[in-house]
Image 1 (cartoon, one colour):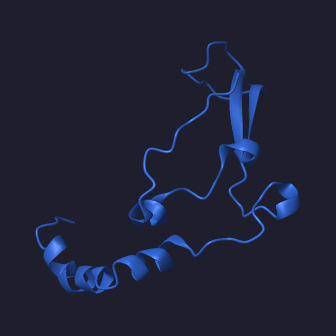
Image 2 (tube, rainbow, N blue to C red):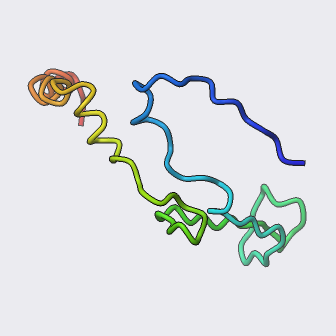
Length: 100
């Protein structure tokens, strides 16, 4: 039985940070595949599992929306227009104690 999740926030501030990929139908788990190497996490030697992730934008006939909202960066720039300039101006300061 699939679990139902409740959205924890409806604030537009979080909109740029919400993923735009849905696990269903954009992924497929293959429970038993042959494994050529030694995998200590595998419960049975030579058998492993795989996951296929399709994180591309889906067309409406594939279950995607009719139109896509603005990208995260566009929304972020609209909601906090000076933030990227501020980060750029302080970039050297952020890294001044970093050892290479």
